[in-house]
Amino acid sequence: MAMAQVAGALALLATGFAPVSLAPARAADGPKGSVTGLPLPRYVSLKSDRVNLRQGPNKDHATTWVYHRVGLPVEITAEFETWRRVRDSEGVEGWVLHSLLSGKRTALVAPWEKAAFVPMFREASETASLAAKLEPNVVVQVRKCDKTWCRVEAARREGFVRQDKLWGVYPGEVVD
Image (cartoon, rainbow, N blue to C red):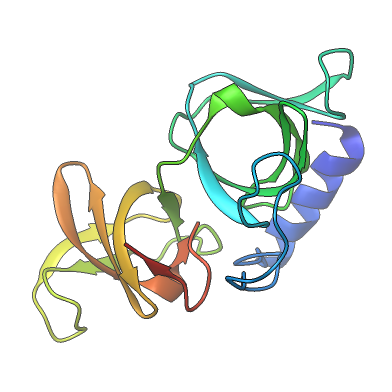
C-alpha cells in the first residue's frame, strides 16, 4: 500500500470512522460496465488468497497492496478490458485482474466496529434467539437479503444479520 494510502487508512481508523459504502446505493437502471454490461458499482469477492491490487489496469503498474483473504468482499467501480477497479471496506482502491474475482456474494460484519459483537439471529427478528455472536470483520457468505435482513452463513452456522451491519450489501438491496 502506498504511504499516502496507509496514512489515509490510519486516519480513518484513528477517527473510528469507516464508511459503509463510498458509493451511492445502486439503482437497477444505473450505469453498466463497459466490458460486462453488469451494474456499476457492484459487490464481488476475492477468488484467491493472494490478489495483487495495482495502480493501473495492467501488470506493468506497481502493486500497491496484496490481499491474503479469499472471500473478502470488494466493490467494482470500473471496468477496463480484463481489469476491474475495486474498492475495499477501508476505501482503498486499485485494479485487479477479473479472473481473481468471484460473483459469490460475501460481506464483512461491521468493519467499522471496534469491539462490539454483532448478533446473528435464528430468524429475521431482534426478538429471535441468537444463532451466534459475530466479531467485526468476519467474512460471511450472503445467501439472501430482503432490504432489512440478510440470511448469512459463517463457520457452518446460518442465521440472520441486520443488513445495515454488513459491508458488501447495499442499503435496501435485495439479494436472491
